[in-house]
Image (cartoon, rainbow over all chains, first blue to last red; front, side, top):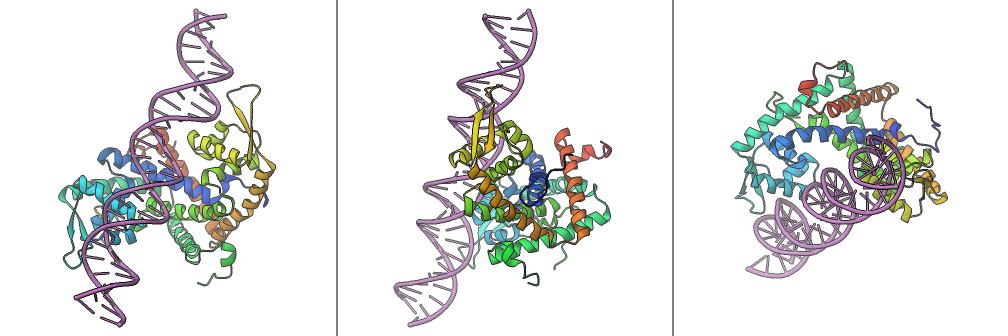
Length: 168
Length: 168
DNA sequence: ATGACAAGGTTACATATGAAACCATTGTGC
DNA sequence: GCACAATGGTTTCATATGTAACCTTGTCAT
């Protein structure tokens, strides 16, 4: 381990938290996606839509947007592909014909229920690397970081100008 | 907070660790990228290349691949755009004319040194949300998780088949 | 009613990305 | 030396993604 200079004018990418998180998260997501895409030909967005519909029926595309943090174009495309695969069923909302209500088909539910244990298996394997304390800590830490990022986005400013607003 | 069923046949996306990490990391990266791309017109891959070259001169594209976890096509494109912006300089390696050696230009180094504090500011703002203990814990946790993901990739198998090999 | 504007979704376009084919150079076996 | 494999990098092509334009249906004030 060569201890590089770590002053303000240097930056070791491998020690830079945002970089580390990005690499870690992408590799985890990619590994899991590999598992279910090879078995069920689902993309990540399509799987996320199914995951939400597995918990709640008769959702609109807008509901999916708010529950998945994906934009509406991605939802639209994921829905289109799931319709073609006959994993979900769509019908117009009689009360508002701009909306359509989405539900898993039996086939979709079957696939859903086969992916769940797969996904949980990966997650559990990761959690098994951590002590109980670590698991609790990780949960708290990600929540804190997420809250802060949301503040960045809400205020649409850089952290320097936020440094006083710890109390928001 | 409606406490949903949390048995093996259901999955609350918002509580699914890989999903949370993915959303968190992407939003952090995006926010930071927004800051330097708007100021300096750099993409994420281009910035990563500069970050590495800021620490070490005369690297080849292959060196960049191994130091950034990006594939060689991404490196090639980032290098091309940085050359056009005159942020880096390229010369053939006299010992092996397949290789070329990359170095920041004065202009590139200037931009580099203006991005560093910006990047550190965001990172520090995130770390400021955490206690000292949390910061240490996060570092350990990400290291542990990363090691495990590398095992997944190395063995090219799903975690079920790895569960005995905690000792690798 | 009716015209302006908002909401739900889809389509079109421009850009980003990755896998595989490719070109040039170097190393290797004979 | 000379075929042939391996290495370093770039280009091509097919796919993925985001932004903006768009179409349809609803809402609201007049």
